[in-house]
Length: 137
Image 1 (cartoon, rainbow, N blue to C red):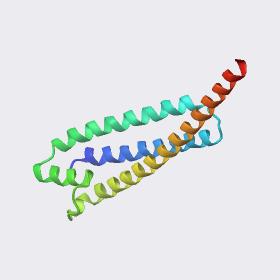
Image 2 (image 1 turned 30 degrees about the horizontal axis):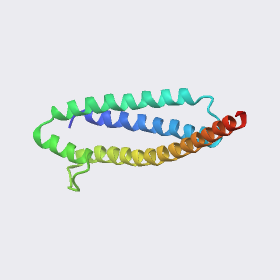
Image 3 (image 1 turned 120 degrees about the horizontal axis):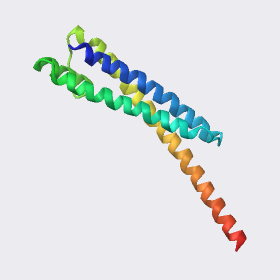
Image 4 (image 1 turned 135 degrees about the horizontal axis):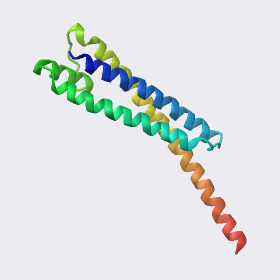
């Protein structure tokens, strides 16, 4: 199996961990109603997502360069379409992908929390604006 495949998954794990930390910071900022550095958090978040996209592109290219049997094993491991047993050489890939999937689940949960907090704040601001408009009429 290609070292590039392993390296790409390792890099994706690093970037998703950083993405998780930024999302945690966003959650804390929303909970504290402190949006001063929010724009820079969004920028950081966007950069990590772009880096994951670049890793994915390189990963797909590297997978296509593998021999047929290896390519099939790697695809099944990365996209979770199989519970087959694989040779020992695939163990590190399976563990890295398992970690990535776990981080992805955590990120999904955190995104939901941040989204809910932001929607709540938006509703509060809209209500405040409407109340101010009524008061001036």
